[in-house]
Amino acid sequence: MIIEDEELISSELSKLLENNNYEAVILKDFKNTLNEILEVSPDLILLDINIPFINGEILLQNLRKKSNIPVIMVTSINSEIDEALSISYGADDYITKPYNPNILLLRIKAVLKRTKTNYNINELTYKELKFDFQKGIIKKDNIEIELTKNEMIIFSYLLNHQNKIVTREELMTILWDNSEYINENALTVNISRLRNKLKEIGYENVIDTRKGLGYILS
Image 1: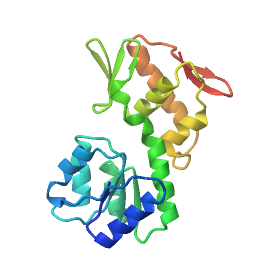
Image 2: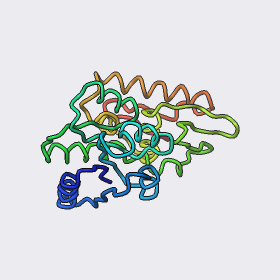
Image 3: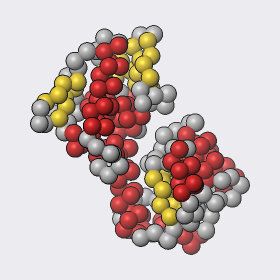
Image 4: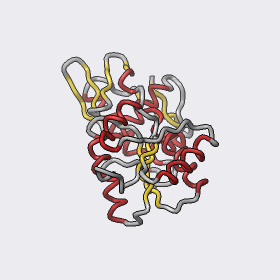
């Protein structure tokens, strides 16, 4: 979904996306932006900051109360403050105009790849555990354990590949696209914390380390 009030830009974006095998929807009604988003439920949103009736950053903040749809801010505002605000409000990426179309397409591909495990996570179960991605928790009976976003993504990815080895490279790609993590130890820390939380509710040693290969959820 393209949320951009300049018709020329939104039209060019739509053509770029459709020429690269994406289905593009241009938002028309800026008075009911949030409702329009939730009704269409797109796979990803390209969102400008300066749009009619509501600031794009505020819209993003309101959206995050209801949905984890990936959002890339595409804006002419080249400001570190606005970029930091957008990321803190839940943006998955931030790119400024004028942008290189190929770079934008690569960013879109990376965000979709990184977030693709999030969509059906509420339907996932593991033994007696149930997921609630909107709240960031896993449940067992009346016990709820809060997980970070990264922990939820790791666990859901391992579950989607249960009884198969998942490499560290795969996990780092879906988490950070191999470019934003400081070092490989960040993944080790996330895995360790996830294991400790699972242990709290009786699931000890369910994530096994295969030396030199990766991890496997049994």
